[in-house]
Image 1 (cartoon, rainbow over the protein chains, first blue to last red):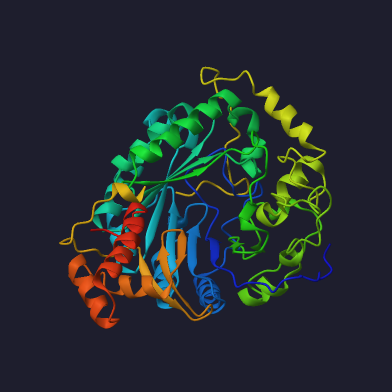
Image 2: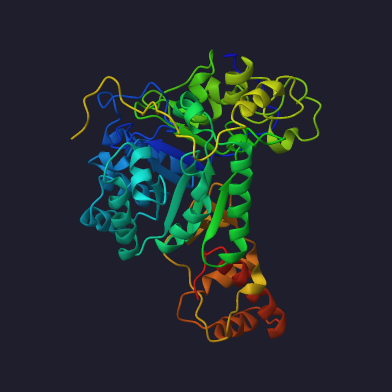
Amino acid sequence: MNAPQKVSEAIAAPVGILAELTHRCPLACPYCSNPIELDAREGELDTETWKRVFSESAAAGILHAHLSGGEPASRRDLTEIVKHCRDVGLYSNLITSGVGLSEARMQELADAGLDHVQLSIQDAEAESADRIGGYKGGFARKMDVAKWVKQVGLPLTINAVIHRANIARAGRMVEFAYELGARRVEIAHTQYYAWAYLNRTALMPSRAQTEKAVAEVEALRKVYAGKIVIDHVVPDYYARYPKACMGGWAKRTLNITPHGKALPCHAAETIPGLEFWNVREHSISDIWYNAPAFNAFRGEDWMVEPCRSCPRKSQDHGGCRCQAMALTGDARNADPICHLSPFHDKVAAIAATFEEVDANVPAGDYVYRTLKTQAPVA
Amino acid sequence: MSETVVISAESKPHLPRGMHLKHDATRGEWLLMAPERVLKLNAVAVEILKRCDGKATLGEIVDQLAAAFAAERERIEVDVRALLAELVAKRMVDL
């Protein structure tokens, strides 16, 4: 799989970079998209290397820099990084839990040229939210952060990941985001990778709960038209066709881990045999066009049936490679979410085990996200 | 959705913080940069949005465009209103 492959079409320039500045995070959300093996503080890229990465990104045609983590505010050089993004012409987007920000720091970030803040909430109610995030007082802090974002004049998006413990309030979270002054809200049903895959038993709602929540949120589009934009990521275990994961493998964006490894997506390391390059040794442009992992699933030549002859293949790109890997054992297979996949019965069987759960059934014990090798950050 | 937006001739459309026009050298095109979105703009949209500075009223923007392109005012007003209604609904333009 590591041999360079012929890519039938010309490779378009990347549009976004998701920079995981650190995996350190005060919260411990059980659905975190970071890998189970988190990068320790020791070994994180230094400020100068990140600046070089962003300079190279802008030169390669990247437009958006998504500053993420972990909690990006855990990096003391966050303001300097934001300022550098502005200097090289990148649109900077801070993806934050809010914990670790202060009113003064928010002002500093705005002055440095930050363009947008995406703030996560775990629920629309404090007690439940703090339980899900594994951090007491987190909800209250987020309310302050939303206020500060507004004060400094930055646009705010609220992001809410939906699962069994909060699905009853999916619609409420749209209203809540509007009350917090957001222009945009992402209602994102949990995607089962990494920590969420590990916690699937505790997280996955029933089909009935899911359908009710989806309908509720869809109905709010009309109510909130022109007030708040709703981006709705619908759950895929109950879908008929797979999602166009990442808009296609290595087609639009790349992820950089805290230690500098370049990935085509969050979960790409779960696919065995892929060779990843590191920004310490390669430029962003070299990685985008030449790294073996990026070329592994570009185009359509790697596809097997039923994707190979499917009329939808250019639309959904066969779904998600990592989900195909996790559920069928071969990343080239159709994402088994697709009802045409010979492995679809596996997904149906998993979904069936959640048919009976409802909001009154306790969500169970989570395996909270932790950085095993490291003492908690003060 | 766009019909729910009412834009008066006196409103002063502008791009709020977090929205900017960008000429992208890599792709050789004009883009409207938005939070987690990028919109490709055609030449007409670029001319309209360049004039949305929060000072000019909708009526003045239409006048400017009609003069600059020696075009029929009514025709231009339709284009301007259609674009702004769409962007206001997406919360990408404020009035």
